[in-house]
Length: 168
Image (cartoon, rainbow, N blue to C red):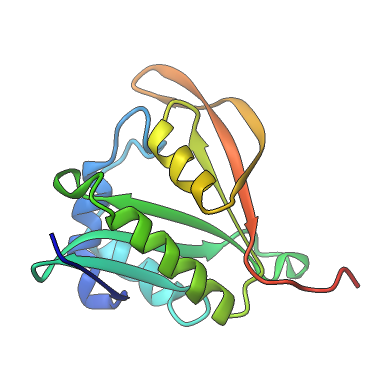
């Protein structure tokens, strides 16, 4: 499978939504609601420019995406972003997630972001391993952070500095 990566666009909203909705399980996502293409398009419209997003294609089809979003609305968090990586089930374990995250890290640094963080359900071993392979560190666990399919799930917080900034 030959993979190619590029910046996401509004035209990718349907493919991104399909991949995201396929990931709604107890170990991948806390989201229990089906996402709509309109919601995805609005998220892209709101965030693209300041907060990078990329898609990975195989044979012209979008098979993975990685995106950043504002961490919190307060000015003190300028330069900090949440990130997500999702891979279509048929493309998992073929390098699409790795390519998406590697490119997202480059784009995040170029966009002036200095830190990425995320929350990963503790049982999501694949995502934790992917993040660890890129130097993300696990900084803590939120216990019983979200209820999915009637089960309270813990999640681990991961972070990585992507660009050096002075402490002052």
